[in-house]
Length: 115
Length: 111
Image (cartoon, rainbow over all chains, first blue to last red; front, side, top):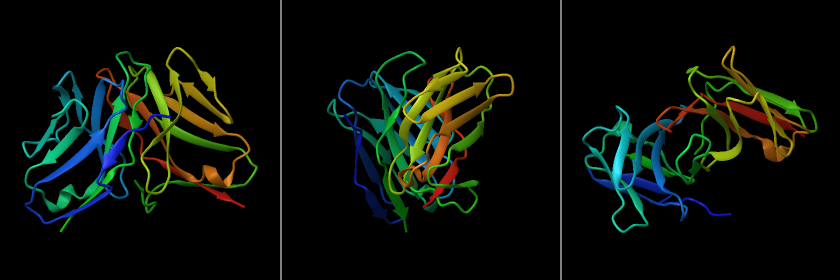
């Protein structure tokens, strides 16, 4: 079964450094998402992306965050200057098409630890 | 992808028994709901979904019930197995197709 693939599985970074988290979507999926899960908390929406544009972003997704699909395959989340509170699991999710009855499929996440 | 269960409600069941996990959702306008299973170190895994024009949907060993009147979802797992031990999340899809997750329930299956 096709999977969403995320790399790295674990990233340890000094506060203030930039990080890039990578996702390879399922091949025929058109809608891409990033979610975050702080330890012990629920999964929270960060941003949705379609047709090379951000569709929607949450209030968490401030100017330090950006997303892009540079080569038509990888979908990346960049945090420009990391803060301690950015430590969390980051999940990429993809969805095949439009319509409200299509589930999002998740990768296994990147654990981001900010020191 | 581990949700440490310091504050997660926990359901403990005997292997072979049926499990029922409940969830309340927030938006009466939501018309699509999904149950996800999250095992330690993994991302949310799709289990079953339901549209708002249905009140019940069955899969293999799982059934989802939807009560729109009280904005309540439940996930029933028949003949629970040790491999069912995980955290279970309900999620509602809003009008912009993003998911809003519930807070999760940890299912522990006793051998």
